[in-house]
Image 1 (cartoon, rainbow, N blue to C red):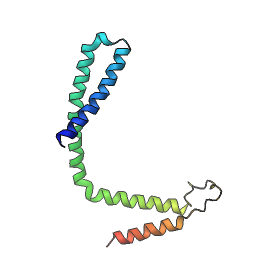
Image 2 (cartoon, helix red, strand yellow):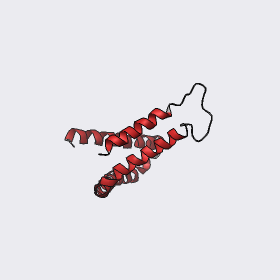
Image 3 (cartoon, rainbow, N blue to C red):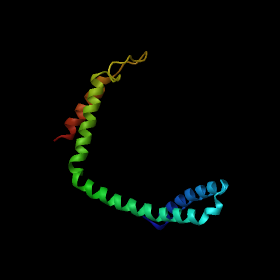
Image 4 (cartoon, one colour):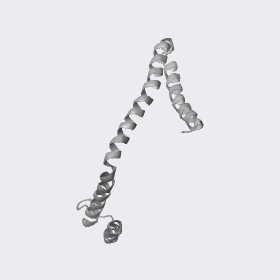
Amino acid sequence: MTVAKLVALAVAIGANNFAASLALGALGQARRWPRVALVFGAMEFTVPLVGIWLGRQAGRWLDGVAAWLGPTLLIGLGVWVAARVGDGGNGGGRRRAHGDRGGGGSGLAVSRGAARAAVP
């Protein structure tokens, strides 16, 4: 991340805290500013660190399962689409709107063709 992007991110987060501080001041909470500043500062420091840690943990987990997770999700999506096409795409028997012709067969053909193209 470049310095300019980091500064832009910091300004966006700071603007959010500025808006919250304005609201607290308008509600008459200005006399509690030391406590508000301490809590906001602690959160500004802690939350990004927790996010970095969680991102690293998720990255390590995904690194181990990415080889099978992506294809599994893609196959699951294909099965779901094929099932929707099989019931006419109308949600399990609900009446279709006037003029709706479905067109589910072409979607099934496309998904079968894509499956054949994806599997060597």
